[in-house]
Image 1 (cartoon, rainbow, N blue to C red):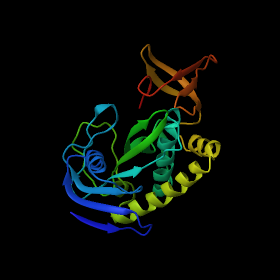
Image 2 (tube, rainbow, N blue to C red):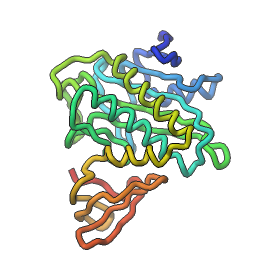
Image 3 (tube, helix red, strand yellow):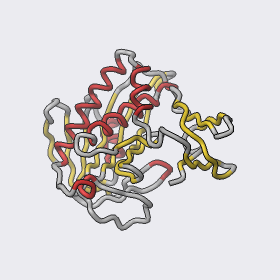
Length: 251
């Protein structure tokens, strides 16, 4: 393990292998004082986790696996979705430096056209009505060219462009933009963040297939609320609203 600084002078801990960068950072921050913007990266995760309890496949030394520590104590618990929005925007804009066709699939998967390039797992600690600590975990497919799991639609930046990338450079691109959006959040520019997030959404135009507890239906995106609630409109002008895990895109 080594510790160094990136160009924005964030504390950066680099690991060859760990079970999960989120778990490592959580345990470390519980055991000792940590600076905001501390970042842990790993060449390999033996137990990488995704949303919905899924595992995250990643070839050793091929991809960008990292977790970042924030203390957004100015945000109320019901506003925690803003953290999801700003990291999604940061990754979307950083990847857009390298290729076109990047979007955010609600709530915070990053897609290239119809394929998933990045997953995000955010874990919050609360104090009363406010956030105390947020650990943002990111698994971004950078240089992996073969995927062996049963994940339906993975893709990497290298598969898209045919190039090989420096993972530290991609990390720096993301952290630059996350720092920018976090600054806007502290300045209470929440509506602007929501607007940017909506503009970046996957399948934001036209009607598409979704599935909820009642089955598959057609709808178009209307809005995502401050709390992350997704509102859809069916062709018959019926409005339906869902929290995470209550509805999914049919891919």
